[in-house]
Amino acid sequence: MKTVAARPYPYPFDPAHTAVVLIDMQRDFLEPGGFGAMLGNDVLPLQRIVPACQRLLALARRHGMHIIHTQEAHDPQLADCPPSKKARGGLSCGIGDTGPLGRVLVAGEPGADFVAELQPAPSDTVLRKPGKGAFHATGLDALLHAKGITHLLIGGVTTEVCVQTTMREANDRGYECLLVQDCAASYFPHFHDAVVEMVVAQGGIVGWAAPLSAVQVALEG
Image 1 (cartoon, helix red, strand yellow):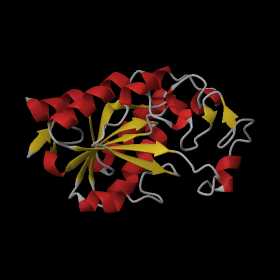
Image 2: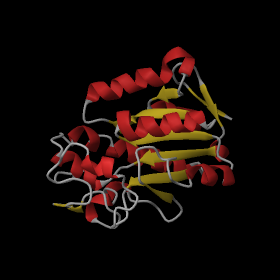
Image 3: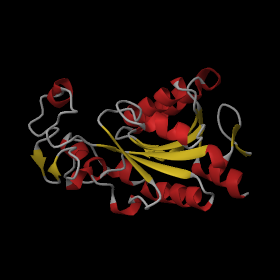
């Protein structure tokens, strides 16, 4: 067992039963011309976590932890996209429409791909999801059970939407979750900070939070 110096108290985990879940590090969210930028957001806060995410993946690979990359993307017919999701915001260029990076949030389009620095390795799992949470309408729970995974180290974007939703879903299913806080980001930094506090409040009602450096110390001293 390893122990991370985390909030609200130390987080013990066995790397053999732990997976890293890196959420939606896609061009549509992180690059100019992507969906996030078209919504009027500054993508720089998301781009800044890419080096830390690279270090997290390298650390996980050195210690034999399974890695899961989630990808929010719909099939080309949008059969898995609720009309309410597509209509949200009344956007001139929304989900399924053609933007600078191809059709927005559609599987196989350039924008749905992962950023170049965080391309999955052959041994990693890529999990396409139609919603914000990684457990909704996916086989994630069955995959984790099959691999004997009980603990999750979570990062990605955005902290207050897909990251937090996934962490709450995992918590409800009995997984012990640590938010690697400098491997997650929001277009609105105060939203990120608020989620960290929500996670660790009331004795860790959703889970734990710690910086990547604390995870590295736990694994490598």
